[in-house]
Length: 220
Image (cartoon, rainbow, N blue to C red; front, side):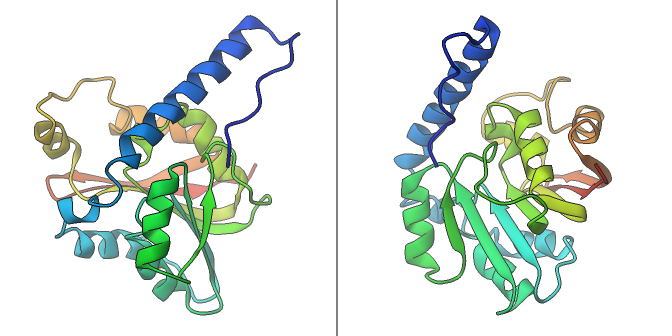
């Protein structure tokens, strides 16, 4: 799905600037992942069991509807399909066409794939029972906006899993940097961010082997 249209000529400068930065950040994300899509899964061959354990935390049932937000090459899609069964609905959303091409080639017929910004999903209100988001939140140009949109598309009581197959410290070390207090995924920062945008943080785990924050969609 294309980024949202530019504000009307009469829109405030701040609104236009926010839109422009959002679009620019999406473009940078697309460019980063487009050239890496074909070999992405080969870089992390041992992550499957961690994905399976995180998806189990969603508590999915046969017939549920679930979104893999920022699905990439679709690593989670077969696991989500197995959890909801043939009568369930699985959606995979990503803004990078090359990633969706890989997902479709690797897992044909597993999910409905959406070329979409997670801040503007082509889904009706309260469509979803759960959202799985692996490695998503650190790539969002507007985390609050995207979390509100995911909440809009999820029924009250639905689940959200923010996941990464390694924890914050291990990921920072992999990239040669140190953790800082303003890290969005740190619990003191994440909890109020979720609460302000339709979610209640229920559990939080950040170890070398996994990062997993599970939240529940609260009543509007």
